[in-house]
Amino acid sequence: MSFHEITIIGNLGRDPELRYTPGGLAVANFPLAANRRYRDNQGEQIKETVWFKVTLWERQAEIANQFLQRGSQVMIRGRLNPDPDTGSPRVFDRRDGSCGASFEVTAREIVFLGGHGSEEPADEVAQNPDPIDDQIPF
Image (cartoon, rainbow, N blue to C red; front, top):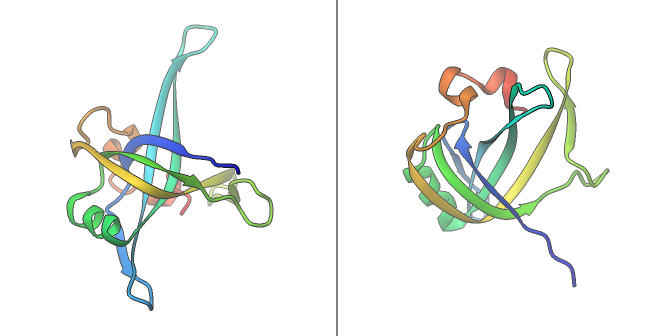
């Protein structure tokens, strides 16, 4: 038997998008930004943001749609969904010509960690009113 799980704490990049499958199952998607700050060898502070495309199912999808909004801080536990062809994150070309990767996660658990942008919101979410075009790959 093998198993993998990922835990992410971050802020929503936009409001959850709720829809229903033809069979009536609720599914919600939203981008989640996780920040990491550290100092390089020269002492410069570096900020790294990794974006994840999160999918929730059934009642959790409906609850997320009802209570979460862009900037909300959450913890997600789930599994990574690799590209079926490569086994890696989905790679794509951004509009500016640079390369990007989409880390896609199916959540099995979501924990609300506070109000809108409660602790340390993703700078891109806080500063850019529409981060979708340039920063979020999906």
